[in-house]
Length: 224
Image (tube, rainbow, N blue to C red; front, side, top):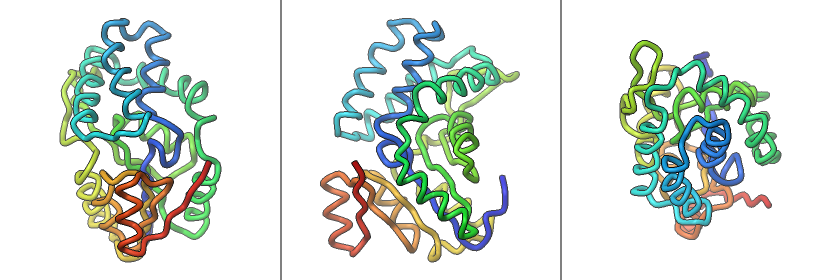
């Protein structure tokens, strides 16, 4: 990871930087390549469709992440990331919101580090950041043994209040001034993440986040 200087910008991924759920698009790509069985993918997809339709329920996200861990169990980390690169090119890149990516690149041009903050696995989140030319990512860490996924998480899931914890820890390790940092997200579940920085921005916010943003004078950005 690189030194991001005195300030950074943090971007939620799903429904902020990209349209829909990155884990849904990735799971479909892996399933089409025979990585997962139809039975494995079934329940996972149902919850992902509910998420994409609007209701970002933290309980559903926790179950989705647990299922994702079990689906990856026994898979080689390097192989999974390599296939993930292919799926990114096929299914993810055209779902990136160009206006939000331009905003991230404006932060880079201003000398700020730009970090993705996502519930998706750390290795996949890192790959997203690398492919988009960003500084790095904070994702859900998976336990591995001998370069193979064990099916268990190696720490707390990167969603809800944990995003604020991870951003604060990164700021401490890199000497960032959180009062000068920016954060962008679409869901009320990310209020903690937005609240920890001095410059929070609601992007296509859900109803609860929109109300919170209006009450606290946070900027609201809307994109098609």
